[in-house]
Amino acid sequence: MFGLQKESTNEEVFRLSCELNDTAEEIWGIKAEMERLGLTPKGADISRVKSSRWRKKVLGLIKKSDELVKKGEKIRDRLAELEVPIEK
Image 1 (tube, rainbow, N blue to C red):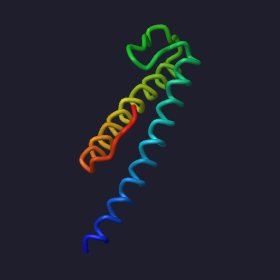
Image 2: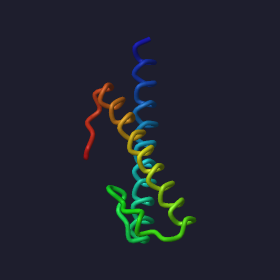
Image 3: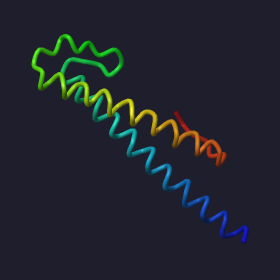
Image 4: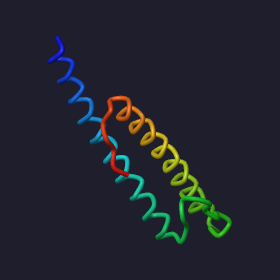
């Protein structure tokens, strides 16, 4: 029984690691897009964005970025529960 538990834990660690990497890649993509627009995700000054269409896009990017950061934190917490060392 213990061997099966260990295997499923390894599978979960692998899955969570993949999810964490995918989440990080998405965050970097959003960061690059916002930098292309001349903004940074933290404290983005959307008043500089004149077009309402672009403003809506920037707000969407900020919201998506926040959601991905929260998702990443949950994954990191779960990996910590499984006692997996995590590089920052």
